[in-house]
Image (cartoon, rainbow, N blue to C red; front, side):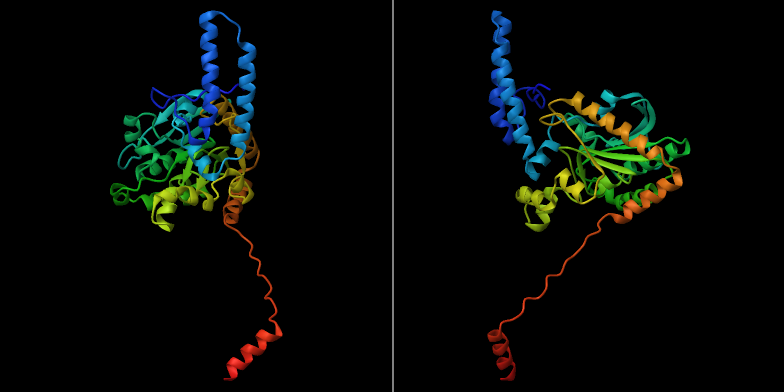
Length: 351
């Protein structure tokens, strides 16, 4: 894939992450040469090709050694594909379903019938919003209780018709406002955790951006859980963790390191089942490529879980959930005291 310059986050100059700024010089030089070539008719293809090779090499080196905080920044990139982008790029026959039959329709959680890679599924996912108006309508992807009730009802509908469920997660957490507390956000998420753990239909889930706290877990109980290469999945956001431990969100980078916000760490700790590769330089550089990879993962994972009988699948889901959080501790043998220190302790005790 030839590296493409970052798009702007709403017109004007391209949005650049701090660690990407050295790469932007090469991208701008490619743009300048291509414009000059179009205007003058001179052939700069050899020079452009050489710069592209340098840029590709630099992208590989840069993205191969991202820190946990840099990985979080990529997951939040303004041009990163959102749920509705993936619906447009990889779904056919999408029919959205609304409402929780109790309060209203939460736009932060999108549900509907869709066809992915030829398979009819129930698709459930978080939508953050692309511009300011849509972000406010979607609460920046932070769902209210009615959103989780809606998601559960639609997934139960899928089980009724024997359809598998695909969940795409992209939220910093559930909505933390007073209204959500008044309408029972904790209860809504808890009910989802219980009911999804025993929902009799194949379920797969993938974190496509941010996967924060109970807001992510509310739709992430599945038979196969994956995280995209430059996404994160955590019990809390870095800023939230920093505010608790260091009393300031300014320590978010330190918190990201402490939380090990890297998909490889999640895989090593058996908290996820796989990592979905992204195009070189992140999904924001090649959304179509990211959608192809995600669609292929959905196809593979659904084929795997649908081969199993439902009783065996339910047992495997139970065993998988019970294994989360397991750990091993090793006690170091106590170092023998020297004769001198033992004698000093004995004399002190006698006195």
